[in-house]
Image (cartoon, rainbow, N blue to C red):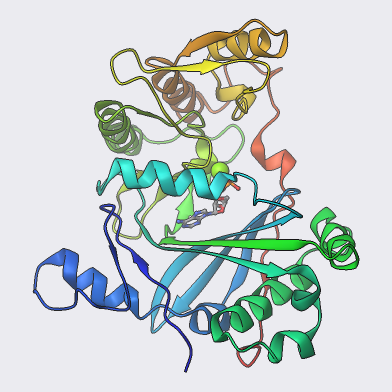
Length: 333
Ligand SMILES: Nc1ncnc2c1ncn2[C@@H]1O[C@H](COP(=O)(O)OP(=O)(O)O)[C@@H](O)[C@H]1O
Ligand SMILES: [Mg+2]
């Protein structure tokens, strides 16, 4: 009997296997519904929608007629699993709670597996732990679906020969129809009503974040989703941080250099703070206005059709090998 992972309800509470199934309010309805998510069901209809050169892959998947986005990360390590964008994202989202301007996170799980078992069907199948067996099959399918020259494939093979471990981290999110980046065309100007709608949705999301001491740090078109019901929501809290609640500052130093987000949408004081950290000058970056600045840059592009600083073109899209491909045949697990 396959184990059902515990459920992360996006207001921060967890419910194991539908144990909190009783009441009729929205939270317990979600707990019932999401507790039914199982890795084999998720994997059965999964397609890669986005895949970086690092550890992370985003999949779309349909479970019992409902579509979800699945963020998967495979981390290769020999001792304690390293921090990862998805682990940070979960922590921040627990802190954020539920908000209708932010794509919800429904489910999160984390499993450690010997790398060799992930690559060897026989070893995985002999596992007594059904969840580990399913997770190994999932990770194997995921790794083999990556482009042949993807660095993660080589790192997993090396880890298997070295007897190292993998940590598989998975988060299931509300699926957004399209990203703003996917809907943009170079030179095209968006209509005023849509721009106003985007501003309302994302400004409300940022207001909520700031009111609970969260800074997003990567507001850009790839992280803004248009939901099927017409809402514009903020997504991707993989770069977000819990800030000092009063000042919304985050300390940085040489051992703690934040990612710059998408350079073309990053405020000058953030670039300066990052440079100071790289140079070994410990400081605190003031993010209170920086996320709003990024939203302003997004709106400029929508209203003008091109970027205010044409030189600053390095977008996350350039760094990503975007492909959409079938990940698993339904019978894989
Ligand atoms: N909830 C979602 N609905 C639809 N597509 C998504 C969703 N989450 C991510 N994606 C797609 O995957 C891409 C990368 O996901 P994202 O969460 O931004 O992670 P990262 O930028 O850290 O890789 C997004 O730009 C988008 O194309
Ligand atoms: Mg992103």
